[in-house]
Image (cartoon, rainbow, N blue to C red; front, side):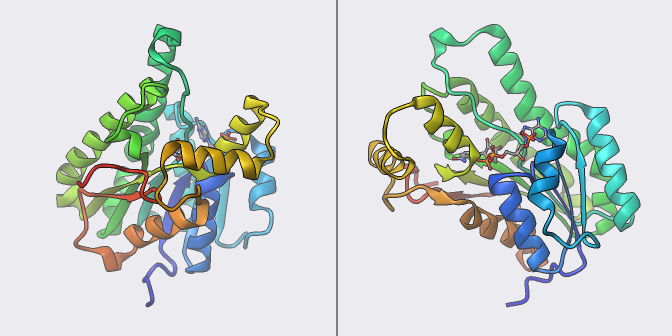
Amino acid sequence: MDLGLADRTVVVTGGSSGVGLATVRALLDEGAKVATCGRDADRLAKATASFDPDRLYAATCDVRDAESVKRFIDGATNRFGPAVDGLVNNAGQSRMKPLDDTTAEDWRDELELKFAGVLHPLTAARTALRASGSASIVNVNAVLAKQPETRLITTSAARAGILNLSKSLSAELAGDGIRVNSVCLGLVDTGQWTRRHAAADSGLSYEDWQAELAADRGIALGRLGRAEEVAYAIVTLLSPRASYITGTSIDVCGGVGRGIL
Ligand SMILES: NC(=O)c1ccc[n+]([C@@H]2O[C@H](COP(=O)([O-])OP(=O)(O)OC[C@H]3O[C@@H](n4cnc5c(N)ncnc54)[C@H](OP(=O)(O)O)[C@@H]3O)[C@@H](O)[C@H]2O)c1
């Protein structure tokens, strides 16, 4: 099926690694024009070096900084035209800390990252999204939003807030022809987990460590997800073929989610 994404402009934050990079690749494969960002210029340049420069705009940007996001979005619209047809709010990471190790600064930083990661790109791209007439926003979230874990207490709370915000935005922006949905990830094999494997210093190979992790967390499919498996869900929600889907979330989690909603 043709997803109807050819020549549409999509902004993906955090495209230099993991889910963001897989989403950029999937969108380019569909013929879309893609703008992406990350904080580390070298990492971004290396990750995107093999992509068609005619259809890719990559720039450094920190989603916590409204001015930096505005510059990035302005750069994208200068390059590809005034309309933005899709926005994937993906940039970020989680904070693995239980309550007693969590400082006031941790709470502030985590809430700021998660909310700024959605609100700054939305604010900067709002006019361009409206100009599309049929835009789609996908917020990359986590099953933690519905199923909190005490070892990730700040991230769980922030994720729940973002899921709530996504619902409000879907109602608020519908009149502008903008759909808003979320994908809720379980454990996906990306830079986040390679960094945790290195930090754990368990003596296990990455594969054995992952297998233990999957068993410990009760992942029904028995393995971590792959970034491209998340990208497929994101691209589906971005597609104009999903024109009647808004205000909802798709769990991409291999069955680790226990909820039925
Ligand atoms: N992997 C999982 O198991 C999992 C589970 C649930 C939710 N998620 C969420 O899924 C999203 C993607 O995660 P991932 O696993 O693909 O992570 P990743 O491989 O670490 O990639 C994160 C990307 O975001 C960028 N980034 C991070 N902070 C940023 C900031 N403040 N401003 C701009 N760019 C920023 C990174 O580049 P720079 O570092 O150069 O900025 C990188 O391109 C994140 O929001 C994460 O929390 C992941």
